[in-house]
Amino acid sequence: MTIQTALTDQQLLRLEQLLEEPALAQSMRLDEVQGYLCAALSGPQATPEALWLSEALGNAEAIASAAGGEAADLLRLLATQLQAELASGEPPMLLLYAQDEDENSPSDYVPWCQAYLHGIDSAPAGWFEALGANDDKEDSDEIAYLDEQLFPLFMLTGDAAAAAAAAGEEWLSGRDLDHMRNECEEKLPQAVTNIYRFWVAQRSVRTFRHEQARIGRNEPCPCGSGMKYKRCCGTA
Image 1 (cartoon, rainbow, N blue to C red):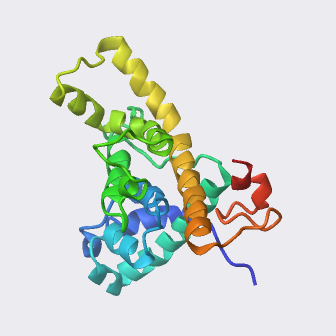
Image 2 (tube, rainbow, N blue to C red):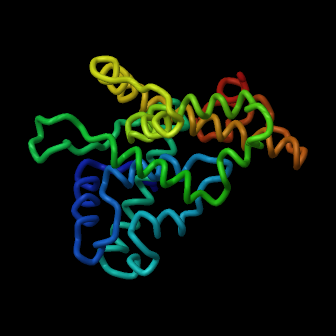
């Protein structure tokens, strides 16, 4: 028996249609779902399925509807597909809508990035708290790395500009701003992949330290890439 682990184009289109059904009026859009799931699968611990389904569909009760049940099955497939892509180190192809109704207009990254950041905010465990962030001490290398990888999201949502303004600092403008925005758009898929793999490695380290569990170098890597640990996260 073959177990399906990826959405077909037809199923992806069906999921998009279901998320627009009146019965799922509070659900996320398809682009938001993908952004949110990329974050929900990452972090100190993955967000439980029941929680991310509720977030994606608007509320837990939505799953009880016919449209919600069908959408939930497709969302599980999408999550499995995303996890495999992120674990492999292969940047996912972002599902983005155009800024205007004209399909020739630029892609709108804001909803995708905002949904990802919502995934961080609603995570069961705080990302930076898990790394020991403290205003009274210097950031660790891990915190600095996570900040660096998250920068494209903060840039594309406008949060970075808002933070600079609040701090009274100068910010980019004109061509410099356009160049930075384009650069962040290009870096975003790899950045979310890096973040996922960073957290999988962190989970392994914490398991080793606190539970004295050891991953054999020739065992499958716990990140789900399908490679041996020594060829994947064990190279760090």
